[in-house]
Image (cartoon, rainbow, N blue to C red; front, side, top):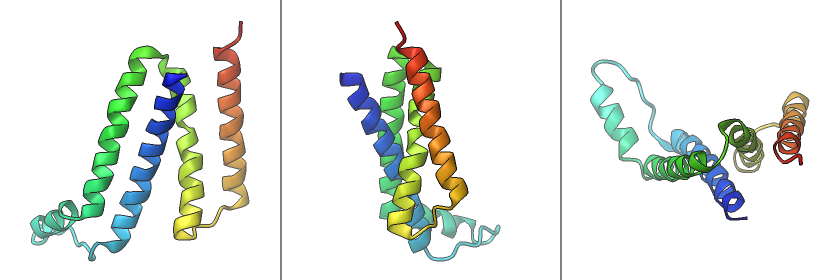
Length: 125
């Protein structure tokens, strides 16, 4: 199913964009965002290759999202796209060592349950 592949690529792109931005934020020199340093801070952010890569991934993800919206119900797509939260949580754990607490794990289970319920109601015959 072509559209399922496109949706999976969209989810991967938005998840990788978030991870890339997190990694960029850890590797950019400290920012002050005061009136005197605003121009310098913005140049620092927008000249970062990681930030640029993150924006490219967000752009690809957005273009794929628009394509999918033309073909499917927004409610169904949103349910599927919530799987990006799970992907981001797992990648954050693997890459940044972020803790997956019991509450976060339970939240992942609720997301999976919600996706299942939407799938079931969307594709019932």
